[in-house]
Image (cartoon, rainbow, N blue to C red; front, side, top):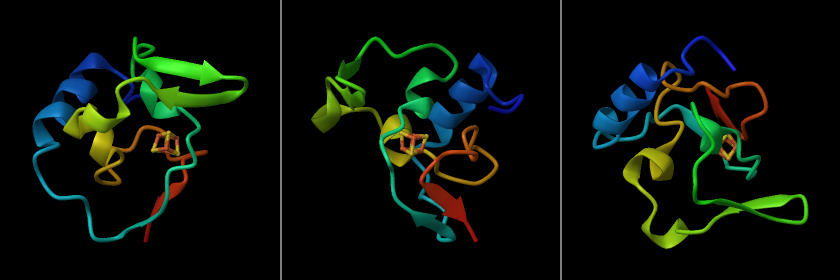
Length: 85
Ligand code: SF4
């Protein structure tokens, strides 16, 4: 995790989540759940064995739906299934 793991960064990501996802984003979510802990553990994060899932996945917020929207907003670059090229 980087220094961007703050409430200020989360609020910024929330407001900018109405913008499109960067075209240079490649890869896919590998459900590591790291972004579900930014900066606190989400109350909707659940575990089935070692696998994590979202209890409200169909109606999750844009912020979660589009994460990581841009490289600069990506806090979990190490370990995330998405890359920016
Ligand atoms: S950090 Fe990346 S791979 Fe992990 S759950 Fe979030 S989007 Fe998916």
